[in-house]
Length: 344
Ligand SMILES: [Zn+2]
Image (tube, rainbow, N blue to C red):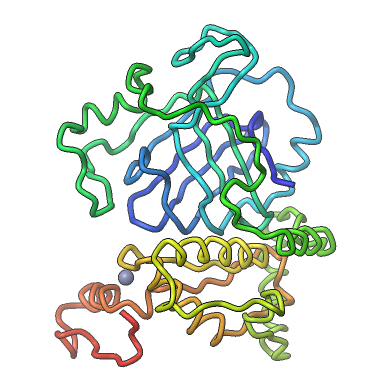
């Protein structure tokens, strides 16, 4: 049920300039409007803090009309959550072409592959791009993460790690799994539910139709707001969903829950932005206490292409301080707002 863009992808650009946020654009063959990504989350370690462009070296054999239909029906501006983004994955390809970075095996060739997976308005999207040519855009910029980089991996080497096949060797064992949901983000119930909602709500797969849509959406939104036809965020979750308090779970558990919840909300066009200061637990706490249990959404806008944003920024003292500085100097409260509500 995932959307697979593999053969359609011509190239693109991806930015991880701030922790917890991946943005970029993907260009599809013969599709005029690129897919814009505004995702919450981080790529895998090999692309952490990296910005890069990539191109696919050659056209695939044949791209089916069906593929184009799917691509055109996608929301062109994808919000949601990163599943896995890495250039260190190996895939087995059958065509024994003369490809850089490949090693022959009896069953075909293993090839390094740019792999992009996210969960957006149209559900899970995967682009598996063996042979992608990658060019780093900002090799002087250190990784955004606080983790100390290995001292020997200076900028020059970092570049080769993405371009030189010799450097690929540390990439780990060939990954032969064909698991549709390797991270088990979705239990089966949730998955079935998402599939059902995607199937029944026409709008989820209706493509945007240029300018007329914008007016349409604005009118729709106005009407929605006036009629007060809102629903609590919590109603978007399965009735039986029990979410643990943030202080009862580990950082890893919080990260897993965040992925699951953000994937769910993305189906309804609801984005949850995570600022670079927030840990997974902090973000989860804001999502749970302020958004899921505090916010209402406009169900009439689901599937319209309109995106409703929530995020950690308003609750983050660091973000507020930055905002104050941008607004002109120290402001009224140079020590930062001692807002009792700020969870971190
Ligand atoms: Zn912040």
